Length: 411
Image 1 (cartoon, rainbow, N blue to C red):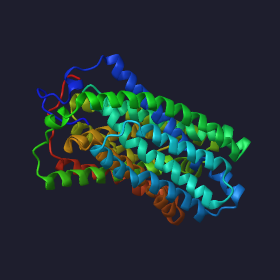
Image 2 (image 1 turned 45 degrees about the vertical axis):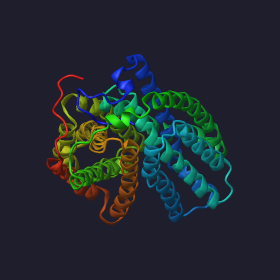
Image 3 (image 1 turned 120 degrees about the horizontal axis):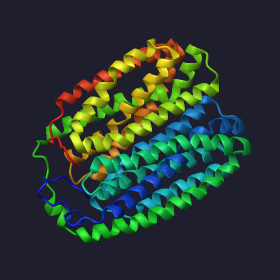
């Protein structure tokens, strides 16, 4: 487990004598690729809802129950898994998590009843619960001290997977039917092979550190109450970020079609542009945090996007697209900084922190999509964007976060 120390104090044996940069980047790229595969397969489930609705005659309540089952398994279990592996590292649990996803996809491809669909959704969610906390820990271990960069490399793989999944579903599952989901188990098998290699490296790191990392472990000297208060602020910031992102991820195309009367294809292209900007923002947020400090990135990412969100509901089509590019770039850069900041608040609890924040972010995204959808049914999609525009103002709470580090001018 990685922990925060002063620059002069070694974190572990491996970080005192770091492996060659090429080796570290190989691990980071491997875990990012596995993240791409994991999130690509996870995103298949909501992408094929129209197919499942037609095949099983599902109503919207049952569709909602499928989403709820998946989100509960994927969100609530993550902190539990993270807390357990903090005490008992399980290097090969990454492969096990991908195995859950594999089994879920197999069941999803041949399910004959709604209860079987629920079980498949739960298994896919459980795969996510195991994967995210431990893979985030691996990214930190392989960072060579550049924690923000490592988290950004790791997370950009997930962003790419979330974008690719629906596209593959449109070209494979929709024309060829539910049984074609079985083809995606090949991605799960590939992911298991990659993660088995990563797990071998992880196990070697655990053995090489022995008890040294626990002796080197230090905290920030903050009272427990102050740490808990800071974690609560970070979770509120996650709420504001992912609720606003839910308004764009889920309803942006409907907003463009309703307000500007653009064709569906044009709206989808504009959504892809926004998602691409968010992926870039995810990647750059971590390295910037390494250089200037996490708190500055949190300030700039959450609160800094407020002028653009306030302007969005009044913009023309051209400026709407332009503003969403800026919003995607700026707002998406926050998560890496928030996660690393939280890990530094609670050194030695990397799995717990990662599971808590990944699970909470995932849950807020799903809850936001559901609540905003109900709001849109009552007041209209344009009003939703007027109301959501104020969410980034919650970034003012960043002022209450303690300063954990001095700004860094070199990575």
